[in-house]
Amino acid sequence: MTNTTPDIWFYNLGIKLESVRKVAFSVFGFDVYCYGLCIALAMLAGYFVTLDQAKRTGQNKELYSDFVLPGILFAVCGARLGYLIFDDYGTVLDFFRFRDGGLQIYGGIAAGLAAVFVFTKIKKISLLTFTDTCVRGLALGQAIGRWGNFFNREAFGKACEGLFAMRMKLSQVKATGSIADGAREFIYNGSVYPIISFNSTDYIQVHPTFLYESLWNIGLFIILTVMLGRGCNSKGRLTAVYSVGYGLGRFWIEALRTDQLKLFGLPISMAVSVVLIIMGIIILRKN
Image (cartoon, rainbow, N blue to C red; front, top):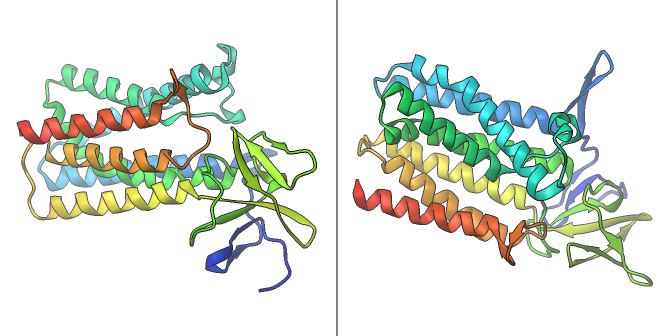
């Protein structure tokens, strides 16, 4: 290995990423962030996958096109509100400061589900048929969107020595933590990360939970695609498999994270994951 000091380093895999920037490019002095690009690509991918499935299953594609704009607006606004209410405790004015960052996935999911429920009621179509058509695109979109956390150096897991352990420059970590007095340790959310020095540069080595979730969701997308290709036409089946699969993945991945949002001492993400699993099982049993 060379003696360079990469921004991100998958040490045990021998992969060095010399420069991982948060800003992708600038247009007339306006910075376009990699995080935003990941979210935009995620939305586009989900949209085109959904339209393709609607076409393949003989549905009216315009129905899903009509949902895109209100669905995205509801989901993004819900994700922003969730972040301000539970993570940042922000004000009403902070809601419009999207460029400062801050989206919470479960706020987005809750608002998105509400939008789907209202939309299907207005259009008088089957809720499960609609969700069956959307979940493949949702899984792929989530796989892509998670890479925004990679560029922001956020939502990482506990200290890790395993194969996929990811080193990040301590100076670039978004999370606010503290360095223990007289010790080579970084403390964040009560978790301790040994500080690793290389060429006078300090690193911490963590579980890349963004990568775990991205790979998990890609696997889920493949499973759903295979089911569709094999003629799975039982109403609610794709929705149920997504719900159980995503819930299982998010549950064990959340257990690795140190920035869990808790209510009465219980991690909300893990509780919601259990609800998703139960909901999926109920749908499977009824359809």
